Length: 329
Image 1: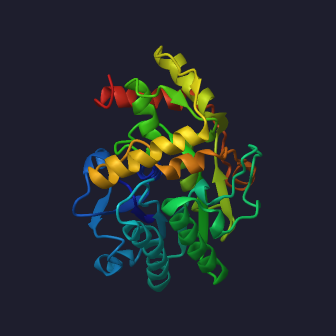
Image 2: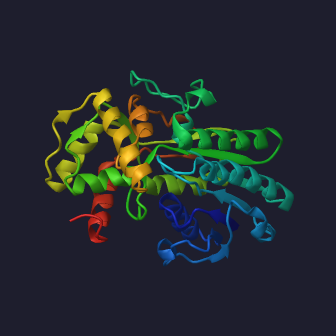
């Protein structure tokens, strides 16, 4: 099976590429001229230079492909030019769906995010049927992913075979950027996590997320969304698990929302706008933290054969990788 894959140089995309290659897929991986190709080492396949912001540059490469697996996304919680994020996440997804239709590609797997769901402050576990709208989205990343997902749903309604996957918070090795979640791990390992907020995340083993991308090529209902999650944990529980793995003390001070928001405000202005660097905390992160992102993966278990794996091994693997690659002592 010939697969056109986007995002292979990224964290989740790297693991998806490995999983597809292990199943014998003939990979054609989209990379930009500026992409760091280190995450592609050891993965058999070819590369196609192009950019989702300029789809005409790689449109001919889709001819003869059996499926498109679209993992690439601009995943940042702070960006100086939000329009660039919308061009990559929204416009790029819409155009790739269109090009796949025009090229006659029979299957399309779109990697969305659990960020497109509507979470609650009381920690109630949500699923794909929980009502949600654009006004529920906090920040540019969530808004852009929600808008992109709507294009995928609309394409499926028009007859295109599109499966939508919504990973929660993937954890594991090779988070080279690192992602915002990876930075939590790195900050903890560096002793830069003195306090915590009363929030929660669903952590999922990135290897299982990748395996389910392979399954989605032959399973699932077009147009359906599938949450791929693992364990629902408070931030304090996550930090305690990292402490158990590393021996580094877990923070004991819980800071209120107002304090975190004030710190994030000044970080955005001083570090972000004045110094031109990415702030350590953003108002978007703090606002998202008011809700516990707890989710159920029952739908994916039933239709895609998704497995809820213990998160401890994935956390250990992530920590070992960050240490081995010089991100932390």
